[in-house]
Length: 101
Image (cartoon, rainbow, N blue to C red; front, top):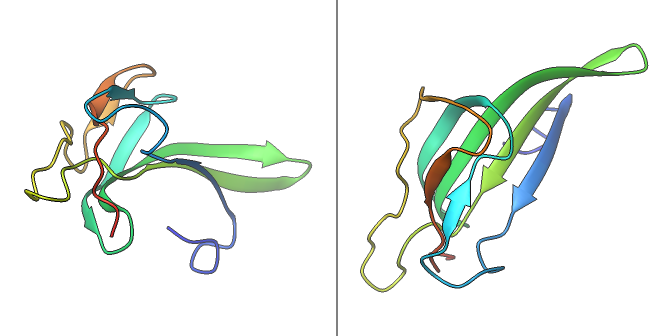
């Protein structure tokens, strides 16, 4: 989900290289999984849609993006959610890996 494709989109990116591999990753807020698969740039990736919010008079869409959730050497995914899953804030969505491309 890129702002060029979704001009009214606000994104928060969570880079999977922050913690040790295998560390749990939790949803930042409640929402719906719109992508849970392999992305060409960030490896195993989850994107969660959190709804709309208002900045002055304009409605915006809020997504969080979680990358590098797999093992680059073996191709194993550490994602534990699926597309269309409804999530609550703090729900585990997978584990950190090193699947950057």
